[in-house]
Length: 403
Image (tube, rainbow, N blue to C red):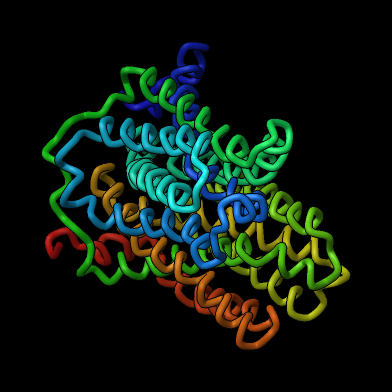
């Protein structure tokens, strides 16, 4: 029985409506600490393990590649186990990576833990949109907003608190390993989810979207939207330090950006929930990012926090809205989840490449201006692509008979 058809007047009905939302938030909050906790502790990690910068980049690149590769394999391997088994296994992998990090002491084992954790992240992240679509068919945008906000909150909190935990316990391993408690908590929520939200087993999804233009367009759009996030995480602190900010203050900019990401992921979807056409709010989300990057290019020193706030809000809204648009294309949760998995798969491969390209531009030009111009041009291109996402085009664009 769908939670969207339960009366909201009775307290038990309200609990039935909100309980699955807590499970969704619990799944989402596990998906970034494994990645974002390493950056603030990288200096200590490198001193302890003698790991080089190129090898250290694998701590981010490997999870992102996993996030791209696993969803693309889902049409073939997804039917081997149930949705519940996949999500349970993914959460166990994330928890094991955190537990392992409590005692590892070499660069090689740390990179291996990133691969294990990244695999778990990829599994849960690929499955989650389909869960949202099935549990909240009439409130997809709201549920995706909660999912996106929880995901971003997990990443931001881990980046801020990991150095605090490491300093308190006297080791960087503690700062990384402490986050195993998050997937353990998510496992408890997942196992105790209400019976109405248990999976309806079927024959699985037997189609893939490699030959569909709209699927590739959605995936590229999603990848470019997240490329801005990846580049900001990788390079914003270094950029701020070139403007005279201290290392600690420049790191806090990531926290500020995260706050506005959460605001964008929650508020913009709620404002756009009354209409199926998401384009006006996508235009807004992309537009405020354009304003932010223009600010970084033209007058960064005086109003840096404002530009970061605009970019963060736009990034948060784009993440939620883009996945929602993908889910909107198909009414059946299994099919919509498969499309969202494809979109994330191709998208995160694009996202993983972006920080590397940004680094090449920074090294070749000696300035971050070229990086901001690259992202600005990408966003302008996204404005033109947004026009194509008219709800009337969904059925024709995703023609199941041709897949």
